[in-house]
Length: 368
Image (cartoon, rainbow, N blue to C red; front, side, top):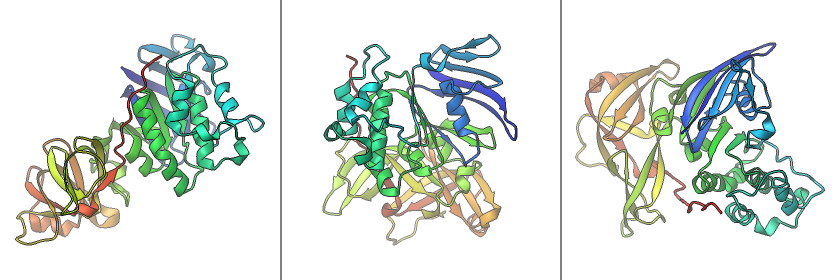
């Protein structure tokens, strides 16, 4: 099943021409700088903007096709919307705000108690919106959208107005939602942290056009994409916990088909996690050093070398048995090591440099 979006639209001072197809369910991050056209995509999919030309299909259900003269109105698309601001009714309690989303829809698989539990808002039900923190208000707004029984959840920079502490508070809830409810989610953001923590697929946009589309590990390990030119460039890989060594305060994980050591984790053996490996933390070598503090010496193959002229650096894609990651080094290092496509290489990665992202995976909610 897929979400297929094709749209073209001209504004007075800009235009947008977007085509992408992503699998469903799962969370697709629409990522790019301000002004790239990300929110326009959300508005078109929701039916709030009628583009000059478009075809939008969700799991074989055609929501819009301008050539065929088909336009499903917003209220019939069953798209749950969450914006930057919570847009709660100030005169209603949290519980009444939540139930408002249930008023015009038949009973569905997403129950009130399930949402309250999933979002951790049981203690807030009798309170008014003005007494809530920003993160609490957003959780309530998300709950209201979920209780409208959406077939698609659309989130337009839902964390953009929150400070770092409130973002850290709400990110685990968003991760739980996408896993537990098995909904297609289209999530607009320009924050790479949110992409790394939440995304299954990425639609990368610039200047009203799609630059690339793919799954998260692929998109974060390609040296030819704008993501690789960021200061925080890093590959994000799915992983699982293999074992723990409390005496050494280390855990062994498997990522990309290879074994890695990381600082001791609380996750049980077998738990699914994802890890982030910053490109600037990877050292490359052709021979293993005899004595070194680095725990992880990974054998790989150079998949590609791309020059980064702005930083006077080079980006090396290191292919693993399953996936790849990036290393940012100097052009001189490329010459001294004789690195080129297909060459064997060793990647040295400190265990403390591997960021283990939240690995909690809740049980799926069973339809009522």
